[in-house]
Image 1: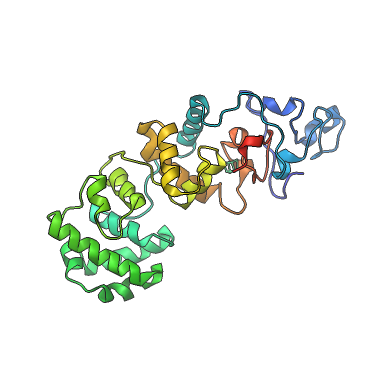
Image 2: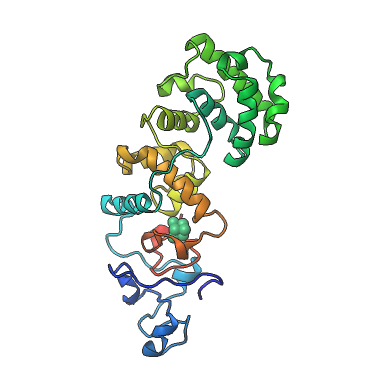
Length: 291
Ligand code: SF4
């Protein structure tokens, strides 16, 4: 059954949906074809014998022999379609320097970028440099960043980070992973954001909640731990895509591949995605695809 509100697309001229006619696959029939196929619009055709699996996402059909979700051809196809759908995307956090990006990224933990972008202009007007932050007590910052949540911890991190940067790095945000990781409040995700977005250094892959969820849906990893997910992504994604991939996946996670009800019918990756919780499908869900 097609979920309400989702309209099956026209088949691609390039044959992207060829597999729907293969025995074992589930086909969603459009009204125009219904009479030819001898079924009801929105129902199943005579062409298929199986399962509700592709639509209901709960009971995967058997995996085709040789299916490898991290085969370079599949990964490259994913990257190509992401490039087409999300060209030139970058970090949504507003910033004018590495320091501002570092602050915004620390503030973005458990908070939306939109909220952070409302808070930082006022913050940077009040305290324009790392030196200005370093001169504060954490309590001095709490009211300014309260709306981003976890404001006590974030205040400590920001003042601690500023003091470290002023004391050990001459007031400049460092450009290496090891140095960044020595700064209070900075873990790999924040370090990768600063290195990739500001310095254009691909040292790793940003793994936030969107990258975590969608990498698993796309079977690029089976891990749940962000550090392990990053390692897996670094293995299968070419290095020159590390920075862009994260930005694209984060945009994809906000626009279509949302956590609770992904908009699979609108997704450019639909016919190569076999996530078990798809809301609409033109292809089998493979046994090995269940995250
Ligand atoms: S098909 Fe659905 S689950 Fe798969 S990537 Fe697209 S939106 Fe996400």
